[in-house]
Amino acid sequence: MHDEIIVLGMHRSGSSLTTEILTQLGCCFGSLDKSIGANSENPRGFWERRDVRDCNDAILNSHESEWNAVSRYFCKPPATETKAELERSCASALREIRSEGSLPIVIKEPRMCLTLPYWLGACNSPKIIFIHRDPMEIAVSLKKRNGMELEYSLDLWERYVGMALAQSVDLPIHFVDYKQLLESPVDEIRRMDIFINDSSSEERVFNAAKVIDVSLRRSSSALLDPDALLTKSQKELVRCLDKLVNNSQAQVDFSFATKLWGRDCEFENEERNILLQNYINERRKSASLTASLAKQRLANLTLRESVDKREEFIAKLKDNKLKTNELLERLRAKIDLKETDIKAHAALIKELRVKIADRDDVIRAQRARADNKT
Image 1 (tube, rainbow, N blue to C red):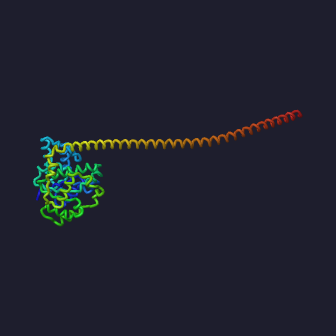
Image 2: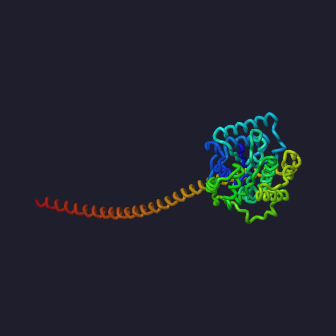
Image 3: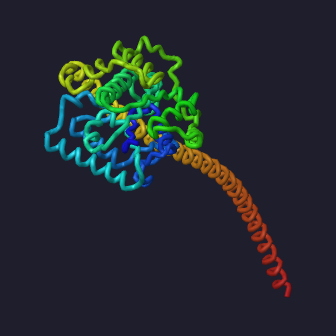
């Protein structure tokens, strides 16, 4: 029985599923409270611990690298004191996991393809589970998730996988094919069970197989031409891994991986590193400009909405003004009618007053005559 099972595999390669299966086969992940959890990318969980992720991020940062920008990793090693401190942090994380359960423990975090040597010094008797997925599918998945160009994703895959192989050549290692794991889960899991437990339990195997959900395989490379996209060294790496997943005991020459990606290659690919770093910088500038453009578009949209509301308000005012003018016209017409009526009544009153005056004159004349007779 070995104390540590380390899952190695590129981002989006199926390492989360592999780790969950290993927990069903008896490996200890530790407290789930330390997990980074799940999201829409991995609805069943990433099966990564926060303390392990933090250690790996610190290691990459000390090499002036990030998970998606590793061209400087071997070219910019940290100072000796920093390296020692990072190794102590890794050892502390391993002790924490061991304290939370029984052996063997399982550790998974894709960055460990790069940072593995920092962890091995604190391991007692590690074994490696290496999960291999078609790099074209990985590239498609990274394009969907992170917007990476296919060629860049493939170069990143080559670095992760090549460095993982170069750094684990002397360790017990079992290779798992992601496609075969989904299509023939029982057979693949049985081989994993034998590798980590030295024997197999059908009950363990069938229980572990229940966690597989083939619907979560959402990235296909069927429409892509690998011959057009893969470089010569990437094709060689794929051929090597295909041999290994079909026969984990196969004797495959890893020397090409060590030569290309081992520590002895520090400055051999400096020109390529510079080109990649320039590409990364341009991508960052592009992302910054895209974000700025998106903000400007949002501001323009907000302004347009404001203008539309003002125009709508002005249109309502104009409509109200028109209605008010129409009402005023109707009122003026009524007033004109009233004034005509008033004039007619005034004329009638004047005529009546004349008649009354005439009648008064007649009455006065009659009274005068009556008074003269008396």
